[in-house]
Length: 307
Image (cartoon, rainbow, N blue to C red; front, side):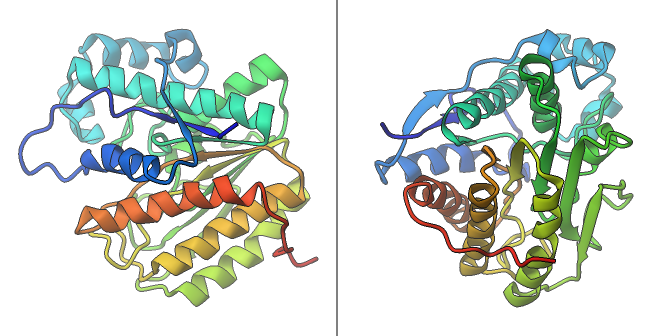
């Protein structure tokens, strides 16, 4: 049976002309992957409010859902409030929850959304309303008693919300490789932060990632969340790095091999990507999911050096 991925583009967000969020990439990515005939596609279900409140302040959740959030808070998020945004946000969380269940059942799960790592417990930021990864971790803890979780966040922007939510929680290893001089300009403290210089190339990036992954292996997580943002591409309007499609593919394979070697379920979420033209972002995202679909049917070669 083909692996399935969850999508959210059946819910639209009305955005003003010229808005810099690339909302079309979600539909384009699904259509790109459909041509591969490697996946089943399921619409992401809407997450329940009580599950979202595992990670988020109930007042914040209520105010967002009913449209009474302070305008300043909405500006910090970066979207105008709408019913469409509410449904899209709930589906984004629901897709990650469903992919997490698939990962436990089959070894890996994927959602073509999520990775909204700038959302804090009581506020959103940077196009992120609710932190789907944090919600999923706490849901897995509640439902399945999963104790040790690793988050490998490879978006070019630090996973500040995730780091803050799990600050002081030693059962969640938050790992972030991100641009040193990029948003958010006030960084939080992940368990492992690796800052990258502007115009970082594939070789330097790969060396830093290779040095970092053994620490994840030693942590021995029961599940891994891979925030697979592709805004490190040289063509990205917001990235400031100089990575290539080939470099990102090598990155993806390292994460897949790590999960396979330590026999740990893997959840793949989307993340940022703002290339111009947007087709570069879509292709980079697509190769992550194509690699995962193919990889779990192929033998692996170790990429983790003993330390």
